[in-house]
Image 1 (tube, rainbow, N blue to C red):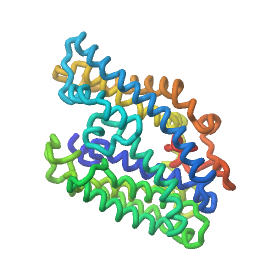
Image 2: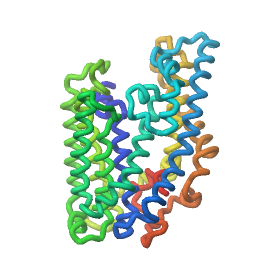
Image 3: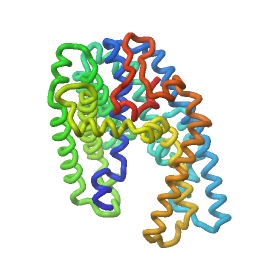
Amino acid sequence: MLFYRRVVLDGTLAIALFIAMSGFLLAMPAALNEGELPGGARSFVIRRARRLLPPYLVAYLGYLALYPLVAWLGQKTGFRPSEHFVRELATFYTPSVVISHLLLVFNLSAEWVGSSTGILWTIPVEWHLYLVFALVLHPASRRFGWGRTLLLVMLGTAALHTAHVKGWLFYHQPWFAPIFVLGALAAHISFSPLPRVCRLRELPWGWISFALVLGTGAILHWLGRDVPPDYIEPTVYGVAPAWRWIPDLAAGTAFSSVMVWLTRASTPGPDSGLVARGFLRFMGLRWLVCIERRSYSLYLTHGAVIICLHHLIRPNAQLWIGDHVSILLRGLALCALATWLFYEGVERHFLPDSELAANGSRATRDGKSTLTRPPSIASAGLHHQG
C-alpha cells in the first residue's frame, strides 16, 4: 500500500495526466485546421461553457443537499461523522464559499478550496485553462510557437508558485498551466503540417516516452524516500508543498510524450509496434469506451459515493479484508449507478453533438479537417469535445 501511495501519490497524479490530455484534445482541432481555432475564440468559450458548467452546477447543488442529508442519517444510525466532515459541514454553506463555487473562483482562496468536497477544485482550474487557452495561449502560439509559449507559461507559473509559497497570494496548484501547454504541444507535434514539426514527428517517440516514464518513476522514488506512511504535515500527498509541482510536471511531460507516441502508432510507420497497437486496442474496447464517454459524470459523482460510504458503512468499527472487499464492490456498484443516473439525467443533454457521443467519431466543426477515426488516446477525453 505504501509503495502504491508513493508511486501515484494517492491517485493525484491522474489529475496531471487529465490536464495534459485536456491540452492535447483542445489543441488538436487547431492543429488539424492549419493553426486556426475552429469557430474562433468566442465560439470555443461558449461551447466549453455549455459542456462543462451546467453539469458542474447541478452536481454542486447536489453536494449542498448531500451534506445535511448524510449528517441527518448519521444521527439516525448512531454513526459519528469525522472531524473533516464536521468542519466541511460548518464552512461549506457560508456566503463567500457558496458564491466562490458558483463563480468558479474558489481555487483563489485556501478557505474556499478547503471547504469544497475535495474533488471539485479541479473544475475551476480546468475552466480557467479553457479561458486562457482561447484568449491567450492559442494566439500566443500562433505568434511565437508552442515551444516559446511553453517557456513563457513556465516562467509565469514559477513566479506565481513562488508567490504562493511565500504567502503573498493563493492560487491552488498553478503548475497545471504548463502541463496543459505540454499536452497542446503534443497535439501540435502529432498533427501540424509544418515541415519543422514533421521532422519532430519522426523522432523515436517510443524510446523517448520510455525514458521519460522511467525518469518520472525515479523522481517519485527520490521524493518519497523519507516519507512516513501516514503522510503527516507538512507534506502534501507525501511531498513538501514547495516541491509538489515536480511529480505532476514530470508525469505531465511523460504522458504528453506517450500521447505523441500513441498517435504516431495509430498510423503505419516505425512507431506502430506491438505494445502501442495492443494499448490502442485496449483503449478501444467497447466497455472501456462506454466508461470514457461518461467519465465527466463519474468524476462529478464519485465524491458523493465516497462521502456516503465513509460515513454510513461502519466508520467506527475495525475493518478486515473481507470488509474492505465488500466496501469496494459496493462503491463500484454505487459509482456505476450514480454515473449512469447523472449522465442520463444531466450530462447528455449538454453534449455538443449527441451523435458524436453515440459513435465516438470526431469531426472538427467550422473547420476544414475531419478525423473520422481518431487515435484511441483521444477517445479517453470525449467529454472535452465541443
